Image (cartoon, rainbow, N blue to C red; front, side, top):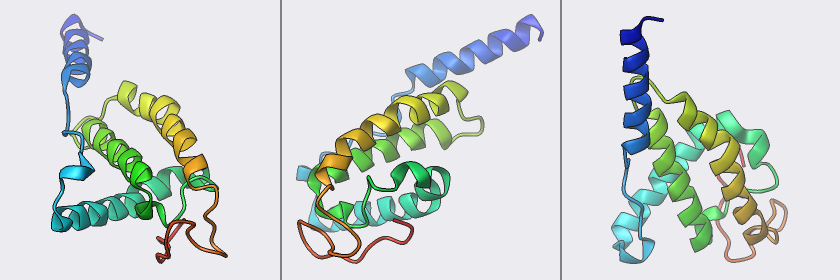
Amino acid sequence: MTDQAMQAASLRRLADELDPGPAAVDWTRLTPDQDAELRTELIKWIETKLVPMYGEYLDQRLRGCWRNHPAVCTEIGQLHAEWSRIFDRDQPSLAGALSFSDRLLPAALGRIAPLMANCNRAQGCATARQPAISGL
């Protein structure tokens, strides 16, 4: 690798580290329409990105009724925002991808699992009845 290529790669890594990405969501400030729109966006992201890539990790942790649990919505929203920052670009950052897989996703699922422990496919949501998301 040439010095110029190494400098370019170093600058890309630095830009990835400095990129704040999307803003965090404060669910308490959303209008009902904004809330519904964001949940729909998160459902699509879960079904098209998270389940196909990490379905085995999600099993027994993230249930289809996640949207009934405010803390889980926050976790999923944060994962989605970070996923977007890392992957929604021409050249996704390997460091960011590794951090997502090794640190961010496992930590979020560790916090989500106990919140959803009393929800299951047979009996439904412990918080409220909602149809499940396909794949979960």
